[in-house]
Image (cartoon, rainbow, N blue to C red; front, side):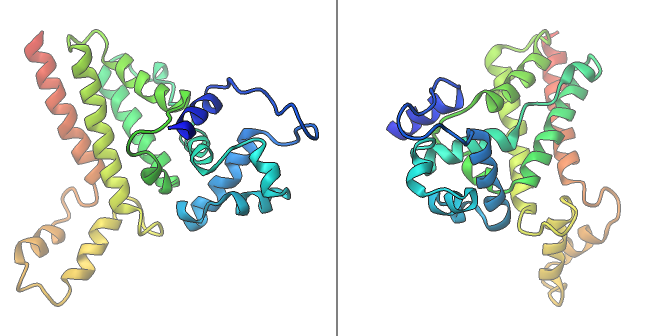
Length: 232
Protein backbone atom coordinates (compact mmCIF):
# COMPACT_ATOMS: atom_id res chain seq x y z
CA UNK A 1 0.00 0.00 0.00
CA UNK A 2 2.86 2.37 0.83
CA UNK A 3 4.48 1.68 -2.55
CA UNK A 4 1.20 2.36 -4.34
CA UNK A 5 0.80 5.66 -2.49
CA UNK A 6 4.34 6.68 -3.40
CA UNK A 7 3.73 5.70 -7.03
CA UNK A 8 0.64 7.91 -7.18
CA UNK A 9 2.68 10.81 -5.84
CA UNK A 10 5.35 10.26 -8.50
CA UNK A 11 2.83 9.83 -11.32
CA UNK A 12 0.93 12.97 -10.53
CA UNK A 13 4.00 15.16 -10.18
CA UNK A 14 3.72 15.98 -6.51
CA UNK A 15 7.20 14.86 -5.49
CA UNK A 16 9.99 17.40 -5.10
CA UNK A 17 13.57 16.74 -6.11
CA UNK A 18 15.80 15.03 -3.54
CA UNK A 19 17.00 17.60 -1.01
CA UNK A 20 20.05 15.72 0.21
CA UNK A 21 23.10 14.54 -1.65
CA UNK A 22 24.34 15.65 -5.09
CA UNK A 23 22.21 17.77 -7.41
CA UNK A 24 19.73 15.54 -9.30
CA UNK A 25 20.97 14.58 -12.77
CA UNK A 26 18.19 12.16 -13.80
CA UNK A 27 14.52 12.63 -14.58
CA UNK A 28 11.73 10.18 -13.89
CA UNK A 29 11.03 9.89 -17.62
CA UNK A 30 14.67 9.02 -18.31
CA UNK A 31 14.58 6.31 -15.65
CA UNK A 32 11.25 4.93 -16.93
CA UNK A 33 12.52 4.91 -20.52
CA UNK A 34 15.43 2.66 -19.55
CA UNK A 35 13.02 0.32 -17.75
CA UNK A 36 10.88 0.20 -20.90
CA UNK A 37 13.89 -0.70 -23.04
CA UNK A 38 14.70 -3.62 -20.77
CA UNK A 39 11.07 -4.81 -20.57
CA UNK A 40 10.58 -4.57 -24.34
CA UNK A 41 13.64 -6.73 -24.90
CA UNK A 42 13.48 -9.22 -22.04
CA UNK A 43 10.11 -8.92 -20.31
CA UNK A 44 8.91 -7.28 -17.13
CA UNK A 45 10.61 -9.78 -14.83
CA UNK A 46 13.99 -8.70 -16.21
CA UNK A 47 13.48 -5.14 -14.96
CA UNK A 48 15.35 -4.65 -11.68
CA UNK A 49 16.56 -1.56 -9.91
CA UNK A 50 20.12 -2.85 -10.24
CA UNK A 51 19.88 -3.35 -13.99
CA UNK A 52 18.27 0.04 -14.56
CA UNK A 53 20.93 1.71 -12.43
CA UNK A 54 23.71 0.03 -14.43
CA UNK A 55 22.18 1.20 -17.71
CA UNK A 56 22.05 4.74 -16.36
CA UNK A 57 25.59 4.60 -15.05
CA UNK A 58 24.65 5.18 -11.42
CA UNK A 59 24.56 3.06 -8.30
CA UNK A 60 21.38 1.38 -7.16
CA UNK A 61 21.39 3.51 -4.03
CA UNK A 62 21.57 6.63 -6.20
CA UNK A 63 18.57 5.40 -8.19
CA UNK A 64 16.58 4.98 -4.98
CA UNK A 65 16.81 8.74 -4.47
CA UNK A 66 14.44 9.11 -7.43
CA UNK A 67 12.37 5.91 -7.40
CA UNK A 68 11.93 3.97 -4.14
CA UNK A 69 11.39 0.54 -5.72
CA UNK A 70 10.20 -1.58 -8.62
CA UNK A 71 6.50 -1.01 -7.96
CA UNK A 72 6.94 2.72 -8.48
CA UNK A 73 9.27 2.14 -11.43
CA UNK A 74 6.74 -0.07 -13.24
CA UNK A 75 3.99 2.50 -12.65
CA UNK A 76 6.18 5.16 -14.29
CA UNK A 77 6.99 2.80 -17.16
CA UNK A 78 3.30 2.12 -17.86
CA UNK A 79 2.52 5.82 -17.86
CA UNK A 80 5.28 6.58 -20.34
CA UNK A 81 4.67 3.53 -22.56
CA UNK A 82 0.92 4.09 -22.94
CA UNK A 83 1.47 7.78 -23.46
CA UNK A 84 -1.20 10.37 -23.93
CA UNK A 85 -4.47 9.21 -25.53
CA UNK A 86 -5.16 10.03 -29.19
CA UNK A 87 -6.79 13.43 -29.85
CA UNK A 88 -10.25 12.22 -30.86
CA UNK A 89 -11.34 15.76 -31.67
CA UNK A 90 -9.69 15.22 -35.06
CA UNK A 91 -11.93 12.20 -35.75
CA UNK A 92 -15.46 12.49 -37.19
CA UNK A 93 -18.06 13.79 -34.73
CA UNK A 94 -19.88 10.47 -34.39
CA UNK A 95 -19.00 8.40 -31.33
CA UNK A 96 -18.42 5.21 -33.29
CA UNK A 97 -15.38 6.21 -35.40
CA UNK A 98 -13.95 7.89 -32.32
CA UNK A 99 -14.08 4.67 -30.29
CA UNK A 100 -12.78 2.64 -33.22
CA UNK A 101 -9.73 4.91 -33.48
CA UNK A 102 -9.32 4.90 -29.70
CA UNK A 103 -9.36 1.09 -29.50
CA UNK A 104 -6.95 0.55 -32.38
CA UNK A 105 -4.44 3.01 -31.02
CA UNK A 106 -4.65 1.38 -27.60
CA UNK A 107 -3.94 -1.97 -29.27
CA UNK A 108 -0.87 -0.46 -30.96
CA UNK A 109 0.50 0.64 -27.57
CA UNK A 110 0.03 -2.81 -26.05
CA UNK A 111 1.44 -4.46 -29.18
CA UNK A 112 4.56 -2.30 -28.95
CA UNK A 113 4.95 -3.02 -25.22
CA UNK A 114 3.50 -6.49 -24.41
CA UNK A 115 4.79 -6.36 -20.83
CA UNK A 116 2.28 -3.56 -20.18
CA UNK A 117 -0.50 -6.17 -20.31
CA UNK A 118 0.99 -7.82 -17.23
CA UNK A 119 1.66 -4.50 -15.55
CA UNK A 120 -1.89 -3.14 -15.86
CA UNK A 121 -3.92 -5.66 -13.87
CA UNK A 122 -5.25 -5.54 -10.32
CA UNK A 123 -5.26 -2.71 -7.81
CA UNK A 124 -2.42 -0.32 -8.59
CA UNK A 125 -1.45 3.29 -9.07
CA UNK A 126 -2.87 4.92 -12.22
CA UNK A 127 -1.36 8.00 -13.81
CA UNK A 128 -2.83 10.91 -15.78
CA UNK A 129 -2.08 9.43 -19.20
CA UNK A 130 -3.84 6.15 -18.45
CA UNK A 131 -6.79 7.96 -16.89
CA UNK A 132 -6.84 10.23 -19.93
CA UNK A 133 -7.57 7.23 -22.17
CA UNK A 134 -10.70 6.50 -20.15
CA UNK A 135 -11.65 10.18 -20.27
CA UNK A 136 -11.48 10.16 -24.08
CA UNK A 137 -13.76 7.14 -24.40
CA UNK A 138 -16.27 8.60 -21.96
CA UNK A 139 -16.23 11.94 -23.75
CA UNK A 140 -16.88 10.20 -27.09
CA UNK A 141 -20.03 8.61 -25.66
CA UNK A 142 -21.30 11.73 -23.91
CA UNK A 143 -24.62 12.83 -25.36
CA UNK A 144 -25.54 9.41 -26.74
CA UNK A 145 -28.18 8.81 -24.09
CA UNK A 146 -26.19 6.20 -22.19
CA UNK A 147 -25.91 6.45 -18.42
CA UNK A 148 -22.52 7.26 -16.94
CA UNK A 149 -22.05 3.72 -15.68
CA UNK A 150 -22.93 2.37 -19.13
CA UNK A 151 -20.36 4.59 -20.82
CA UNK A 152 -17.71 3.27 -18.46
CA UNK A 153 -18.88 -0.29 -19.08
CA UNK A 154 -18.54 0.23 -22.85
CA UNK A 155 -14.98 1.46 -22.40
CA UNK A 156 -14.07 -1.45 -20.13
CA UNK A 157 -15.60 -3.96 -22.57
CA UNK A 158 -13.57 -2.57 -25.46
CA UNK A 159 -10.42 -2.52 -23.35
CA UNK A 160 -11.00 -6.17 -22.48
CA UNK A 161 -11.26 -7.10 -26.16
CA UNK A 162 -8.16 -5.12 -27.08
CA UNK A 163 -6.16 -6.69 -24.25
CA UNK A 164 -7.27 -10.22 -25.17
CA UNK A 165 -6.20 -9.91 -28.80
CA UNK A 166 -2.92 -8.23 -27.85
CA UNK A 167 -2.20 -10.92 -25.27
CA UNK A 168 -2.88 -13.76 -27.70
CA UNK A 169 -0.71 -12.17 -30.37
CA UNK A 170 2.15 -11.11 -28.08
CA UNK A 171 4.11 -14.44 -28.13
CA UNK A 172 4.70 -14.11 -31.87
CA UNK A 173 5.89 -10.52 -32.44
CA UNK A 174 7.48 -11.39 -35.78
CA UNK A 175 4.02 -11.87 -37.30
CA UNK A 176 1.45 -9.23 -38.05
CA UNK A 177 -0.65 -8.83 -34.89
CA UNK A 178 -3.84 -10.40 -36.23
CA UNK A 179 -2.00 -13.30 -37.89
CA UNK A 180 -0.24 -14.59 -34.79
CA UNK A 181 -3.14 -16.48 -33.26
CA UNK A 182 -4.15 -18.07 -36.57
CA UNK A 183 -0.59 -19.11 -37.32
CA UNK A 184 -0.30 -20.78 -33.92
CA UNK A 185 -3.52 -22.74 -34.40
CA UNK A 186 -2.56 -23.68 -37.94
CA UNK A 187 0.68 -25.22 -36.74
CA UNK A 188 -1.12 -27.18 -34.04
CA UNK A 189 -3.71 -28.53 -36.49
CA UNK A 190 -1.17 -29.82 -39.00
CA UNK A 191 -1.47 -33.60 -39.03
CA UNK A 192 -4.58 -33.47 -36.84
CA UNK A 193 -7.09 -32.40 -39.46
CA UNK A 194 -9.29 -35.47 -38.93
CA UNK A 195 -9.75 -34.59 -35.26
CA UNK A 196 -10.61 -30.90 -35.77
CA UNK A 197 -12.29 -30.69 -39.20
CA UNK A 198 -14.45 -27.65 -38.35
CA UNK A 199 -11.44 -25.63 -37.18
CA UNK A 200 -9.43 -26.61 -40.25
CA UNK A 201 -12.26 -25.52 -42.55
CA UNK A 202 -12.72 -22.23 -40.70
CA UNK A 203 -9.02 -21.38 -40.90
CA UNK A 204 -8.95 -22.24 -44.60
CA UNK A 205 -11.77 -19.77 -45.35
CA UNK A 206 -10.14 -16.54 -46.64
CA UNK A 207 -13.21 -14.40 -45.85
CA UNK A 208 -12.40 -12.13 -42.90
CA UNK A 209 -9.15 -13.94 -42.17
CA UNK A 210 -6.84 -12.40 -39.55
CA UNK A 211 -9.37 -9.76 -38.51
CA UNK A 212 -9.91 -10.73 -34.90
CA UNK A 213 -9.36 -7.22 -33.57
CA UNK A 214 -11.58 -5.47 -36.11
CA UNK A 215 -14.30 -8.14 -36.11
CA UNK A 216 -14.67 -8.16 -32.35
CA UNK A 217 -14.58 -4.39 -32.20
CA UNK A 218 -17.30 -4.16 -34.85
CA UNK A 219 -19.51 -6.57 -32.90
CA UNK A 220 -19.07 -4.60 -29.68
CA UNK A 221 -19.83 -1.29 -31.37
CA UNK A 222 -22.85 -2.81 -33.14
CA UNK A 223 -24.22 -3.80 -29.76
CA UNK A 224 -23.56 -0.36 -28.29
CA UNK A 225 -25.23 1.28 -31.28
CA UNK A 226 -28.28 -0.95 -30.84
CA UNK A 227 -28.49 0.06 -27.18
CA UNK A 228 -28.18 3.75 -28.02
CA UNK A 229 -30.90 3.48 -30.66
CA UNK A 230 -33.26 1.84 -28.20
CA UNK A 231 -32.64 4.59 -25.67
CA UNK A 232 -33.30 7.32 -28.21
